[in-house]
Image 1 (tube, helix red, strand yellow):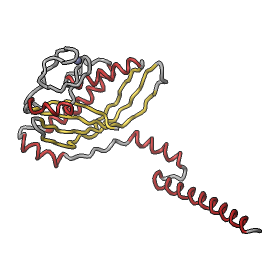
Image 2 (image 1 turned 60 degrees about the vertical axis):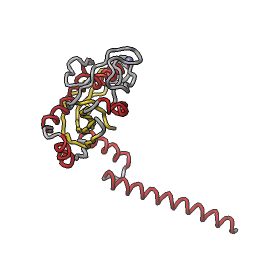
Image 3 (image 1 turned 120 degrees about the vertical axis):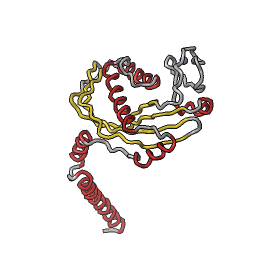
Amino acid sequence: MGVTQILVLAACAAVVGSIAYIVVKVRRASRMLFGTADILKGISQREQEEATTPKSVSGMTSLMLPKIHEDFPGFNWTEWKHRCENTVRGYLEAIEQQDTKSFTEASSELKRQADLQISDDRERKLHRHFDEITVYQTEITNYTKGEGLCTILVQSSVGYVCTIDGQEEPAVKDKREQHRFDIEIVYVQDLSKVGAHATSFGMNCRNCGAPITDLGAVRCPYCGEALEPVNIRVWHINKLTERA
Ligand SMILES: [Zn+2]
């Protein structure tokens, strides 16, 4: 046996050895992560767990609430917590009914967001039904005091069973899902000072979707649509976004 053959054999042995090593590692990792050596079975178990375990919310309520009360002594968190939860339910109901008329809690921006989702569903010929909606937890995650604008960020952990009637996609039946929603509550103190931050405020024309940078504007500068005036000096829910 020549030196070259010995080297080749040694290389082969090394490859086989490392593959065996990797397999052992993967099985060990799978057992640690999923409690079973079968990684595929582990992943499907994990998916099932995820569907039934509420998403955790990074609650900062006890830290943020005193700061909010320093600036707004009358801010009633219990009441706003209910409003946030009602808004999530109202949003889901509007999507199900494919109509935002009864979504009365919503700001015009929030209605626009719901309308976008509804028209997207209609285009794809999808009809979503939300059942057994449960709000598990709602917490304040942040409070910022900007120029002319104060913002409270709230997060809600929500579970529901979503059924989709669709012509293009097969119907998904009775699958419990866990979601997390970010809700933005804003207080506009001074419109003229918010001007430069208007894009972060996230106001768009209801008709053409153009971003409105001048919050004091009466009409959309692009299409001329009448704009709803921004509520000043009152807390209101501005945005609702689903967190991935
Ligand atoms: Zn417009």
